[in-house]
Image (cartoon, rainbow, N blue to C red; front, side):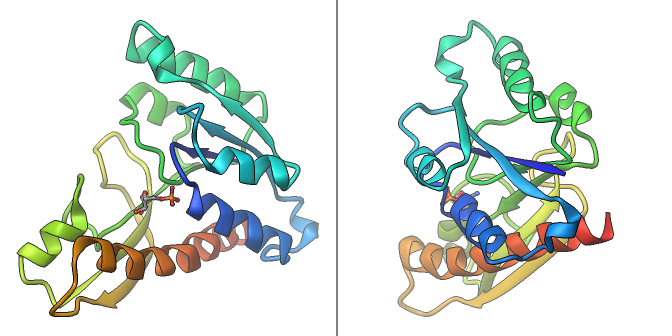
Length: 192
Ligand code: GRF
């Protein structure tokens, strides 16, 4: 069972998933493995981590395509080379068309840095602070055509401190993301 992880930047969630696989988060019997890390940005820091860990990488640079459809066709081809059982969006910052989502229906996951359905979209930590939230968190969910919606698989809650900035809250949430994403994937692989 191949897992393909899509990133756009540092890829700390991808790294956490790779580390959990290396520590045997899912038993070998499952035959699950991280087969590739693919980025839409050639300068994504996570690509170096993947290479250092012997994982195939690819770049499908969205700026090199005339349209969203052309980019997604190229991305799908790069992903489908691995015939993935699971496609994991981890800090992947491109909105995907319904056609792309449909192609991977039921095997496409994302992590969003808020307690969905609260705060879909961007700048989630700043918005939570401005709303006076006492708690914040992250959500692992199945990706559907509607942005940042879809069946919730895991969530984690963190406190919002009175002196929090978006950055201090983001760091606290990110630590939890690195815990719940590997757990959600391991559970999905075991339960099928
Ligand atoms: C994180 O806030 C994550 O919730 C969001 O992208 C940010 C960076 O993720 N999906 P990563 O470090 O690139 O995994």
